[in-house]
Image (cartoon, rainbow, N blue to C red; front, side, top):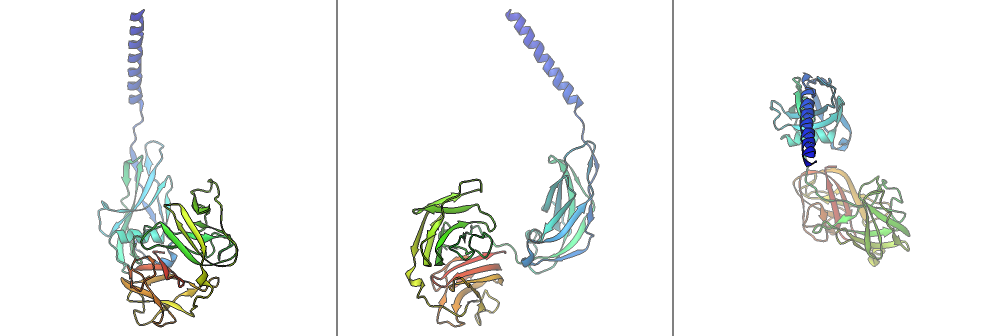
Length: 365
């Protein structure tokens, strides 16, 4: 009986090997038939990029379909390189699957140009071509290289921080999650600590990370911060404001703690007709202030839309004079000192709180 089992097992093994060999022999062979080629735009186009239109489509590329000897899923990669480059260090403008067109946003073309050595506000030429592949292999690269001229705006400044906004009927935006929501000021020395000192109405509020979205979110109760990562997660409790007035809200997203206490000095705090930025980093240097916009909800909160700043330093000052001024030691966020704030060249959205001198400067908007 044992010998019969041994013979049977051997027979099955031979049969399996035979079947596998037949399967290999019968596998279809994939050959490249036709390479893709860019069909639009025409070569010689010029793109002068605008940071205030960074999220808008600036160009649309189309190309002919690649063909292979078998019906397969084809992936396309739109590549850009500096003029005359060999594409070994090219950047990817877009990737698609079985789609022969791609819309390119201004911010993506801008960053590609900067990454390839482009200088802000200086026109330079670049080459673009299309390539196809099947599962990473069988690469076909188009021979039709088009040339474009790109003038980028100020390049990327590394900003590895998260920003959080208030939402709720106690705040300026109400429960609208994308309507001028009050941003939280981040500590200049601890990226996990956030604070806002200012006016709240009686009601409730929470903190959201991305305007227009309800998650990620922070809520909580009794000093414990509760994180909501996705909209399918449970909705955390709201922070509660018992009466109209000034409060200081702080949260630590690492320790998952928060505090909400009255700010007695708020009601009698000095108010200013103007607050502006000044310094070697600003367009007017140390000679004059660039005015900020005062909040109509809270007269101590100021903001400035997309603003070009140079390498240098800056401070905040009231009433176009040096009687009252504020500064800090750290880029992007901080406050509470008289130091000049270090600035790297970029375009920024700027927020300032004259109650405690907190500032927040977000680059590349």
